[in-house]
Length: 113
Length: 255
Figure 1 (cartoon, chains in turn orange, brown):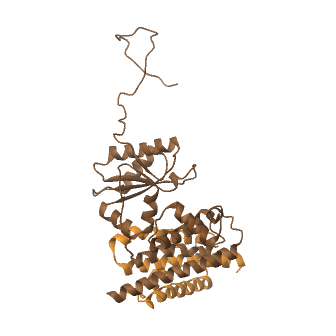
Figure 2 (cartoon, rainbow over the protein chains, first blue to last red):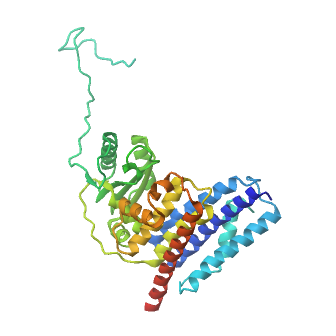
Figure 3 (spheres, chains in turn purple, yellow):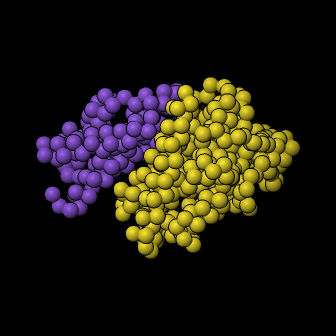
């Protein structure tokens, strides 16, 4: 992988993990008004991730198994770390079981898998 | 060339007479003048656009509490991407239809938010972005907001998440995007200190934190010492995040 591609992958993962964390935290707050108001912020991170994805070859088909594995693992680790940090500070109602499902959905939406 | 057809047998003026052409339906001029809050001298063209927005909404919506125009449209010059329009109404208004009507009529992209009065007041109490929005705005009706800040730390955490990307994506973000992220974090910090959130206060805060004229340098993507900026930003972001987490911790202890 070239250095530039690695950087793009990291930027893609960074923004997608933000979107995933946002999605899971929204559910933890469990407030319809909050969901409506803050959904836009999820969209911003997701759109940014999608823009980076367009610059990673191949952009229209799924990535190679190696890339797929790298992205999935790194994304899950990142999201998990962000959420654990909050849980250790008594942030209640965070459902860690949502990580896998959320990550998989986001990866499908961005044509990584 | 446009043509107007008139009956051959007409009374009142003969061939070659001068006539005045004017529309049958006259646009009603708004009954009240809008209220300008800390906007300075707005360009005449913008004031006309605002009048058109108010007029169009009034024509198409049965009842509303207020209409507020805010965002970059009110900044000097014409570097805005869209116009932020906030309609406060307890009626059920279809956002998509209203946006379409406005955009067709004005010809500029509209970022429309429709919110009921209770949610708006609640937003002002709990959300620094709402306070930033109304610190500089034009509204259809006079309004006074005097709310006591209420800290909902989980919401503030969601907000701060938006500013995190600056650390990871610094090299790729545009100046406007960087400024938006710094401004977002700065407004959260001001909110938590119960300070007034306005563009001036946010810029003052940014310049105190990062150095003289840094608000402009960030916006123009001309940050001279990237390492120093990122070091300061990381430590500011971490401290703010810690403060929010402490708030969440104390909240959960109180429950």
